[in-house]
Length: 85
Image (cartoon, rainbow, N blue to C red; front, side, top):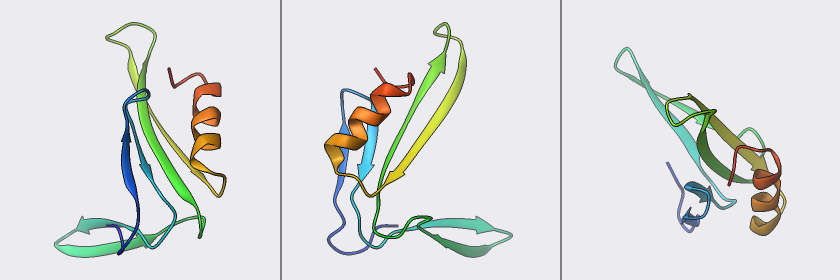
């Protein structure tokens, strides 16, 4: 769930999603109840992507990079961890 004015973009080169800093929450449903979890690092942006290890039928690995660094630096970090292309 994104608050007003929070930027969201698809990063085609990584197959990733970038959520800019601002109010946001993860909303989960458990036993019919709505559970809200806030950002782990206030004032940060989040980059989310996944890759498959090894072959095309490999094991999926999900990545979440939560950082106060700018978008361009987040992309550079993602590319350096080996999960991003």
